[in-house]
Length: 170
Image (cartoon, rainbow, N blue to C red; front, side):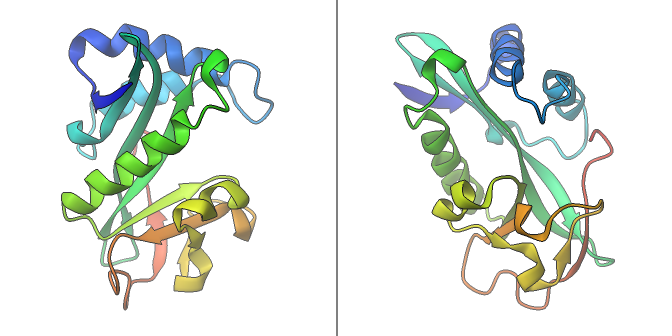
């Protein structure tokens, strides 16, 4: 197994992985692959944070992290979305490994925080907390416990608050 940055030659396979990962999920609109295509073309794109998980020479997972902004001051943060794993490879901690790797790379690149919209029980394992704790709000209506943030270094969210602005690609 290995985790690496996506290459141009991976794009079709990644597209397929994303489609298959979200195919039967009731909360999905089945367009996550289109979102990733749009994000690749936007100014919030970070090539080092589009990661693939390879097993036996095949891409079986993908994670994307892009820039977002908090509040009127437009404090830079990161948005984790989507995380995709082929159905046959789910429940093998591939998503966990991708997220942990993405968090480590994000911190190494100097980013201060990351937001995610997702299951609180799952994402709290990685240190994500309710964004409302920091007075950080989603730009849309969502249950408080589902919109979370993680500091990528102690005190990186001190004095930061406001509504998150995602890339226009969303």
